[in-house]
Length: 245
Image 1 (cartoon, rainbow, N blue to C red):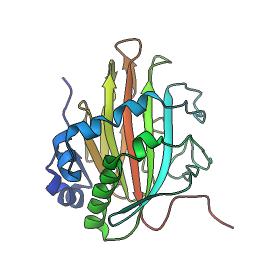
Image 2: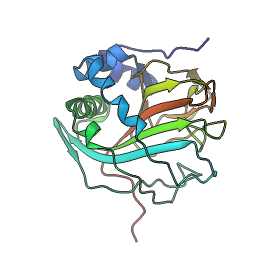
Image 3: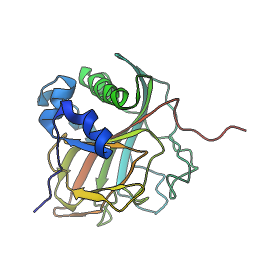
Image 4: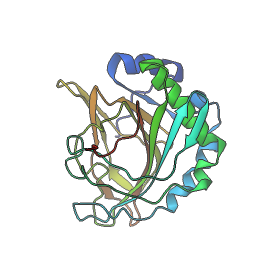
């Protein structure tokens, strides 16, 4: 039996993040947070069938497909910025840190839909409720982890932080796989929880300064088994980039 995530109501999300550093929302709560029905979110999901291969995997795997785009949220305003690479320091990603990774951008079929801006706007408001009102620099990653190699690794870098303020992981689809358990631990202690997101558009939000997280590998139950997610990071002050001389 899969352990269900400990979900809270949308209105309780800032309080839960302040209290424990992490919180989950079920689909109904996500819809409540951004003021849409579940059909609006479901309309985004077909875009995950058109993700190019991630050619930067340093473990030699072929199990990950992705797109990546960046945005700035200032109050009600959501602006997509010119396409840029994704970069993390080695302190936060021992496997891929220090590497400029330029992925294909997200398609307008996703980013032009009103629900997309509503999602970023609603989550940025939660960030501001916890850490103060300010512009939020958002990196958005569409992931498909498949079982082409017999096993797929959602977090090949292991348990980690991302070097941002908040991380959001939303399950978009889970088809014909076992595994994929989400694990969240206090960054400075032994306390942790584990659960498996199974319902589309269930969402986990993390205070990246307080917790570390990982998702266990998946294995196939059917030949085309896969796990689709949307990962959003929210950061104050600017996007991550290589240090300047």
